[in-house]
Structure formats: structure tokens, C-alpha cells
Image (tube, rainbow, N blue to C red; front, side):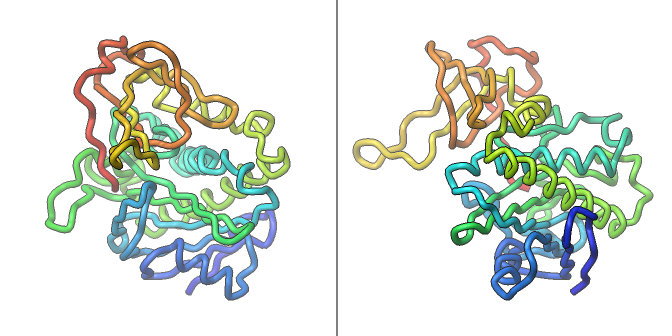
Length: 302
């Protein structure tokens, strides 16, 4: 295990491992075993990673970034709603710092609500998973494709995937940089950015508006102004059936971090949990209500 100081903001360390089942589980074990919190844990190869909504994935050796940041919060769970969105803002901050103009020249990278890292043309670069462990421990996991093409287990390309370096990468200007150097620079930038964003929220008692998280997130959210389909989660109706999907235009992020959607049939709803899909990614920036009923873009975990 390699230990690296990440930032001057405190006794932060990055624990770098070669291979784990899950950076989330390994980081939780290290915290339980006495590793000072906060810290980050990364792995070159993650065999049993998991994403939002319970989706599983594997991070092949050396082609992606898999990092878990461990934070100890003094806020009660009901005041941590912005943590997930703040993690997305931190990831974009880190990408900007490491890639600079090389990343922005080709493709804008932003956030698909709540915190998937996407290119403006709808390809997924990475995802984020936030989990609570015990009364105060919070694990923020970030996975990102560094080099492509991203392949499935059978060798076929993952549909809709984006990556940073290599042919068709969103940051081709870093193609000559070694994989290890790029990964370590991103790990350090991510760790520092996560510390900063969470410290702001802790100081603001979890209020994303006064912490500035709301403004920073809104500026980077690619979902706003798009036609979307929302598949409700965690609810069942009569006979155990799930309620129907919602279609509409994503208009705003409210003070709680919820996605405000103007429904195709009229009215507005606040989405705090659900599987949101962008519709017609090649359509206009501000689609009409009719467009919201169109064919969706299928998005796959990376």
C-alpha cells in the first residue's frame, strides 16, 4: 500500500492499492481499523464496484480511476442531502484543474442529475456513489474512465461511454501523459476538492444555497433545460407495480437539491430520487413538451 499526502488542508492521505473488490468496502474497513479520517483510498483494479441504484461494474486494471473519499460528518443524515451533488461539483473542479483547456477544447463535461459525469453530447465519463456507514461516516465513491475504448466483459464497446485519453478521448491533449501520472494527479485534485466542498457544507449546516453548492452545481448541470424521463424508485402501487414514468422538461434545482420538472401533462414536480434519462440528446437545448415524449437515449454504467 502506498500512502501519499494529498493536501495541506489537514492530515489527509491517499491510500493507493493495486486491487480490491470495492474501494467503498475497503475504505470503510480501514476507517474501522483506525485510519485517521478524512482520507481517500484508490485502486488500480476494482473487481466488484457498485454504482448508484445498486448497479454493479468492474474497473479493469489501469484503465480507470476508482476512488473513495472517507468523511466524518457532524451533520445528521437529513442535512446531508447536498453531499451527493457536491461530490459531482468536486469531480468537475478536479478535472478542470488537471486537464485545463485541453479538456474543454473538445467536449464540455458536466453533470447529469444528480451526479453522473457526462459530456454535453450525452456520453458517460464517470459516476458517483455516496453511502453512509454508522452514525457519522460518509463514503463518497468516484469512478471515471481514463482510457478507452471502454469494453464489456465480452470485448464489445460499452455503448455511450466516454473516456479522457486515447483515440476519441475528451482530453486528447493529455494523450502523451503516463497513465499513472494522470491518475495520481486526478486523485490528488479530487481529494482536495472533496475536502473543500464538504467543509463548506459542514460550515453551512448542510445548506447548499448558503454554502454556494447550489450555484456551482446549477452552472454545471447538463440536465437543466432538457427533456427528461423520470422512472420513480422505491415506491410500489397496488399489486406491487411501480408508478408510471414521468416525462417533462427539467427546469431548475431547488434549495434541497431536487430536480424540478415541468410535466408534459401540466404541473411541476420535484424529483428527489429517481432514474433520470435525457431524451433526444441531439435535439435543441430547450426542447418543447412534444420532444419530451420522444425516443430516449439509453445510458449504460461505465
